[in-house]
Image 1 (cartoon, one colour):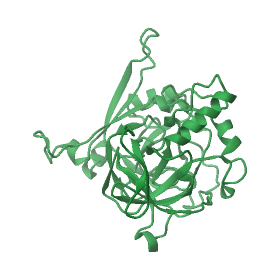
Image 2: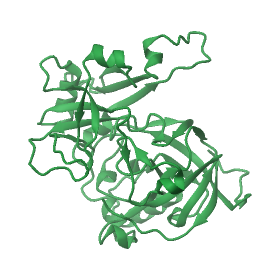
Image 3: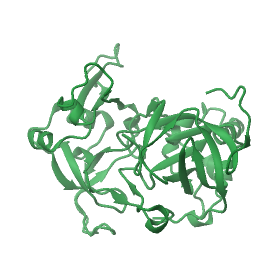
Length: 366
């Protein structure tokens, strides 16, 4: 999205400071991003975002999860531990009601689309290392599909939550399909591996920095996102980091905005302008900007190769972005977390960003 011909200006309620440059969804947590030109905004975030996650089985420790008093054994996975998840390519097929071939009774339409998982074929020869296998799953399986496929509700730990989740399959099953074992071998997971989906009606409520029901009209909820429904990041902020990396880590090939796995990337505003935003309008949708995004080591993973850098960009970010007392010492921040004020609005690349309220932020940890 070019800025040619566009200029910051005063909007109806505040300054218009930038444009949405790109939008990303992550249908499977910590796997390859899917770029979209527009997306429906739901109370849980962008439609199709983080509805699935891989999980490994750990023998219960006896220490129950804080919010649900359980320790089910299944724990979600991310690139923090398994960098090769970045090489699991995810695609979405979405039904088009305007298509001449659209049929409401068709199974793939009833399931609100198809999730396509493509993963490296570890049995392929060295001369053809990029050969991939694929599997297709109903994105939101109907009750009939759940029964026919043998999906079942099981608890799965994600951070301090332990929601009932839909177990699609696992390597622990005698009848496990080959693809789940092949993905287990590819990412190098020594424990039993499973794929889970968010179970309808079992969303995780978000409190901490999120607006309360009295203010928002509902209590904020998420699917398998870490903490809040949406993540926004300015490309000027990423460019500033890149300049700093050139001086301290010349062997580093660049941070790449994709390493930060945001949903919304914008341009036009100065670096770190988003730090002070409290409420914004993007297109027609209003968002509460609730807190800064604290950064772990995940951005060290190259999102196109799955390879991890030993230090960067995390080391450099910590050197100058330890800015939020609530996050604690040594916790760098980059990007902002958001909660939509309403759902079912559409956000598009090119939408303008209008600042409705600014102020101070103090992160509340889990």
